[in-house]
Each structure stands twice: as structure tokens, then as C-alpha cells.
Image 1 (cartoon, helix red, strand yellow):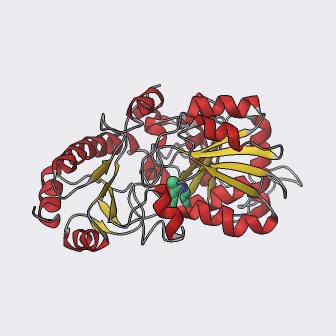
Image 2 (cartoon, rainbow, N blue to C red; image 1 turned 180 degrees about the vertical axis):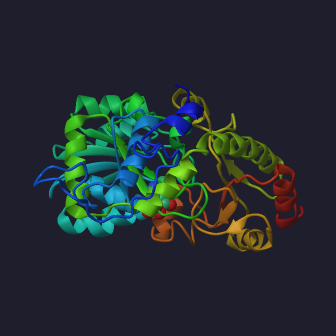
Image 3 (tube, rainbow, N blue to C red; image 1 turned 30 degrees about the vertical axis):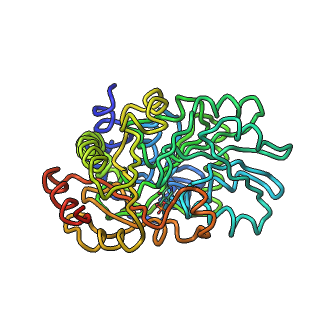
Length: 378
Ligand SMILES: Cc1ncc(COP(=O)(O)O)c(C=O)c1O
């Protein structure tokens, strides 16, 4: 089955008892047992048919065997981290999402989970960071906000060699363009709040795996720690995911045109977009993903110039988040990456004048006109 068809027919999307083509919202916390221990579903935290619908859906479209739905992307990441024990060490992409950085360095550090941040785009750095107590490698590709590309197959080979788990946050690429489980990853994670939901109306996290034992452990953690997605939000997420394919195709086209417009603009100093042939990871990305996505970062002279651009756009909504139908604009240094100390941020290349846009589904001519009037005239 091809991707667009799978997005419509994947997962448990039809209700078996009524034939309803939209899986109903089973707003139930508990389920009647025929006799003790004789049940399909037992208790809403352990399992719910609507949540199960989105869980089988993500497993299908990520080409895994089991899926798990959580109350947010961070809840998904935190739950996966419960696989590890005090004293374990994890190698992590250095410009990982700011919230993940905060979770690892300020929350999980309390229970003695150790981390090393490396430029995972450089495989030698990943190899070098492995210690005796390393248990996993956690990467994002493309990264946020500099769109750095990591070789998933290359890191998977290193993980295999050292018997480590490979975790990939696939939020930016989405399962429509990239399927890390087929490239050697063990666990794929999503902030489903972004492209999967796609309409800025649900906070959710999804995980997919392809291994029975890992799935058993994750279900144990999901049930045991309880950060589950509600039935209503599960339904909303399925509704969004069905149109992922056409949204990504259209977003990609808009993003490509915008990136090429920005490259030529005299007030723009740098443009980061993996679809540009000048982007460092362009060729590598093409070998592991079928599309480049809708996130573009670009640098203007300084913070004051960036703030003016942010204030003067009409169609780019100034907001955190990404991946929705409307175009969004943000200043990573002051917003998504504010929890990263300035020195570290600058060392990563996240300058004060760096603007990130999440390209939406508006008419491209309006988006270009809008940025033209918002950028300084030089
Ligand atoms: C790449 C990435 N991973 C994880 C998260 C966390 O997801 P959530 O906001 O749904 O908790 C985000 C949020 O922006 C993200 O961009």
C-alpha cells in the first residue's frame, strides 16, 4: 500500500461493531467484564479503543508493529527514557529540541541518567562519545532549528555494533517522508502536536517500535506511569493524520519556493533548508527521506532586525510550535531554545538574529509578498 492510501486505510480506523467510518470516541474510563478476567478492554489507562486506533495507525505508517500514544511529545520522550536506569548513559544530538535538552539535563539528571551531546551529523563524534555505560543513541534529523542532517543508517550501524538502542525523534520529517525504523532505528518518537495533528488544536506524542519485547516494556511503562492520550485527543489526532500526505506535499512546494526567495534576499545572511542543494546535508537527506519538510531557518543581521520582521508579518503567526496549516514564525533564541544557555546556543550556531518559519498552506504568492514587506529594504 502506498503512503497516501495507508494514511486513509491504515490503523483501526473503522468501528467493527457499527461500521462507522470514523472511529468513535470511546469516552469510557472502565469496561464491563463478562466474568472476572474476561474482557477486551479493562481500564482506560491500560487501553482504550480510540487510543488503540491512533496507536495502530502510527505503527502502520512508521512501518513498525506497535504504537503508543501519550499526552504530549515530552510525555512520549520521558516515557521512553524510563527504559533506562540510574547510571546509564545516552548519546544525544547536540541541537536537540530545547524541551528534550531540559528534560535530560534538569529532570533525568536527578535520577542519574547521564548524557553526552554530540554533533551526530559527524559519525566519528558519535562513535567517540560511547562509554561503557552507554545504553542508547538519541537523534533528531533534521534538527531544530538548524536542520542538520544525521545519517540514520550510519548511526544505526554504530548502535548495533555496541548493542545500543537507537531512538529517532521524527517530528520534523514525519512518517510521510522518513521512516527511521526501516533504516535501523529501534524506537521512533513524535511530537504529534506538530505535522501529525497538523491544525494547532491538539497536544500529543506518539511512539512506534518493531520489536515485541520493546513493545511489551513500553506498554508496561505507559500503563505504569500513566501519561496517556485521552480518547477525544486520540480521535482528533487520527482526523489530522489522514490528510498528512496532501498537507506535506503542498507545504513542501511552498517551502521550496520560500527558501529560494530567501536565498536571493539581500537582508538575509544565511538560509537553512535541507531542500537547497547548497545545504550541507542535502545529498544525505535525499538518501533517507522522500521530502524535505516545511521548516526553514534564516539569519538576519541581529536580534532587533529579527524582532521587526516578526512584528511586521501578517500571515506568519508569531507563535511557538510548527507543522500546522497556518504559517508560524519564531525567534528560537528567545522562544523554543530559551532554556539553552546563551553560550551553548551560540556555539551551536543559533544566533540572536535567527528566525525560524514553519511554512503553512497559504497561497505562496501571499507568503512571499508578506516576507518582502516585513524584511528590511536594502
Ligand atoms: C522535535 C520535537 N520533539 C519533541 C517536542 C515536544 O513535543 P510536545 O510539545 O508535543 O510535548 C517538540 C516540541 O516542539 C519538538 O519540536
